[in-house]
Image (cartoon, rainbow, N blue to C red; front, side, top):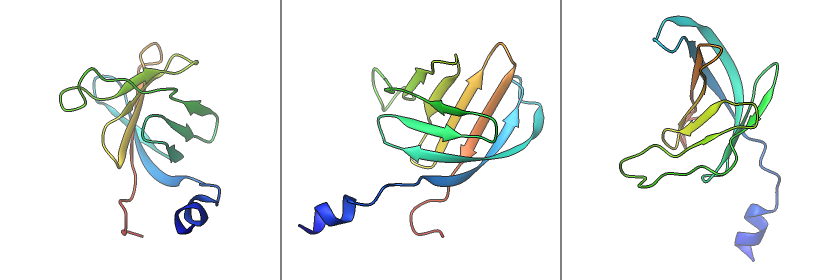
Length: 105
């Protein structure tokens, strides 16, 4: 019963800081995004759009970062429990989000 009660609320996501760079690593600024992490997928809400990764896939999670391509053509990666990246090659943009870890509020 306790487990069901603990999961009953709607998860609102976590606000995370994102570092915006070109694909070659030139810094372009920062952005704040809200990450909803579902472990096998995630979504990020930015000021101008929301991207849903869809199912993330990795042949071996110990060797390869779980990734997927969004409907909008962004490469979405779950780098770790607290880091997520979205990459758009045609726009020469990459955003890496770092989220607070559990208990670091």
